Length: 395
Image 1 (spheres, rainbow, N blue to C red):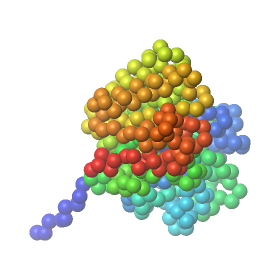
Image 2 (cartoon, rainbow, N blue to C red):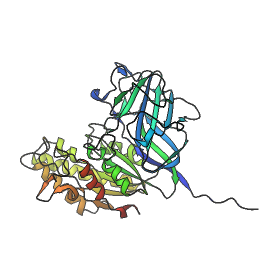
Image 3 (cartoon, rainbow, N blue to C red):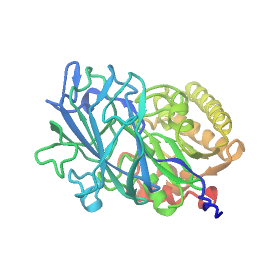
Image 4 (spheres, helix red, strand yellow):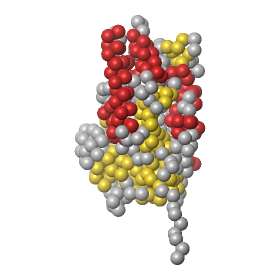
């Protein structure tokens, strides 16, 4: 009797992420999509995301991590956007697929939790854009809403159930993501996910809206054989909560709990320096604490058999308010970078500092890379970061 062919082992791999955050008042949906005690009532929310690795079977994670009430998802679908473009409200006819949860069209996500959908058959090419449409018939009975404000991608809001509509004329555009936190693909066992733990520099401040030219996007363009999960968020810190939980607090959720994760890059700490007092004592203290935190991240990640790479902190000379006149924060940044380079705690070092600093003034970004505020990078700077990552780290 002939034996059935042996199929290669496969597993779920995270191919896109957005770190869940509590939505600040300025980033809430505009009226009539939010009011006191109610968010997204009878609203269809259509959003696009650019995945890294592709596959023919996908699933979604939707988050109510910071919602103030249970999140009732009435109907959800996925599709391919018209023209393959990010930030568009139109979908390609014939590509819409319903998303279910335990075989049901709807789901209620408890406060503080997330939900993983059933698998959906959809041919999603590597580096392509996916459209996710969500209808909330009742809305969320709270004005505490989970989102990722720094989407650098346009989403759309419209009243009523338009989940399967081919376009949304008259919809309200907003440059934020709401509720969606991850996309996963069913992939060969050989494919793994690289998680990037970072702040606004990884989130892509200074990149092009709907252009997908953050450094994680550009890194995937260089290294298409891996999946990349961008877990950066503006204002994020390693040690203390701020705009979202600290890196230490969110490590389990945003890194260790991701499907198929094999590698971690830690590129975070500038906001810890910038928000600590600009005195010698305070900067020595925060640098000590950051070094201890990096060691904790390494220990916890290696317990899950991850390879952990440390990225040096990039310059902020000339930035108001981080650049203090006495140079205490710059001294702390250099001390941390020296430790990252020489302490041999990480499995490898990625020298982002060397990639984008001004050789004539190493405390400042190179002019060609500076977005304009002397802290964040423009697209050229993000290309330099992507180019600085050795591909040998992922063989």
